[in-house]
Length: 139
Image (cartoon, rainbow, N blue to C red; front, side, top):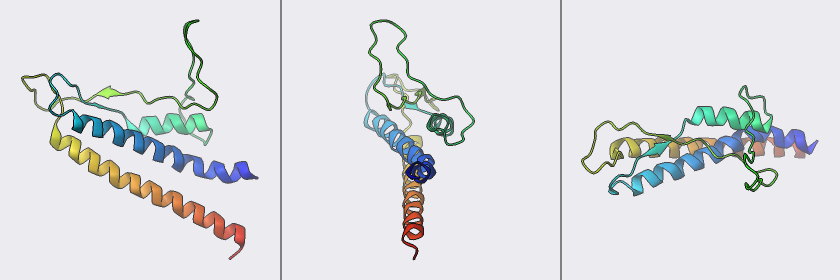
């Protein structure tokens, strides 16, 4: 019974975790805007969400994400560990002489967009919890 209740929240919680991770990556890009040779990073949110949803078993279409140790010296991840997202390099719109590829306008816009979507996801999650509480208490 409890599994059914939490499974309905899995998708939103995965989306919230990925939004937080993307916010961290974008904040890192902004923080290193003046670092010579720094290359901006980002990831495909939709693809990462599909993979996370498939791994959580919530009906996603992608292959589940499995962490594995590929050599005998690798330490196996503890059970329940999430796979990290696959970071990609951002394409610079304009090259700098110092090799830095951070475009502050693009990074600020992506940061603000991601913050709004993070807030929306949080509201959806809170709404789902309130709906479940209303159904449980019968009010």
